[in-house]
Image 1 (cartoon, rainbow, N blue to C red):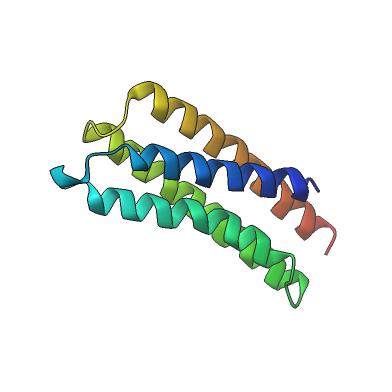
Image 2: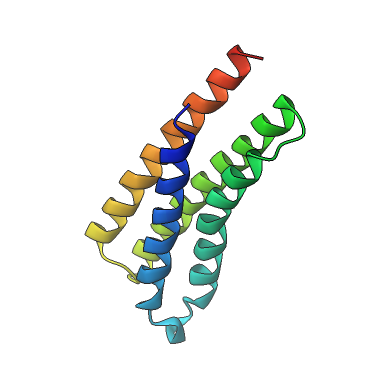
Length: 117
């Protein structure tokens, strides 16, 4: 499992999203979107990190499932930020691409953990 790379990517994505959100004009009613995406993006890495201290294989898999759900939620908030003209299409494309990489890594890790369980 590429846990180290996964953790690194999740952390980098969260920091990238925080930096992007720092530039969003929250006075135009977009503050809720910014808060939501920062929460979901940082939760991806937090759950991956927490999985390292799982009490069981089932707990480990559950934490990765939560990270996967948060990744999907982050993709939704990216779409909302684009739809509200808060971020550019190119920025969204870059963020969605990285979410996709992380999502595939999570699915692979979950599948491998289940097969080895």
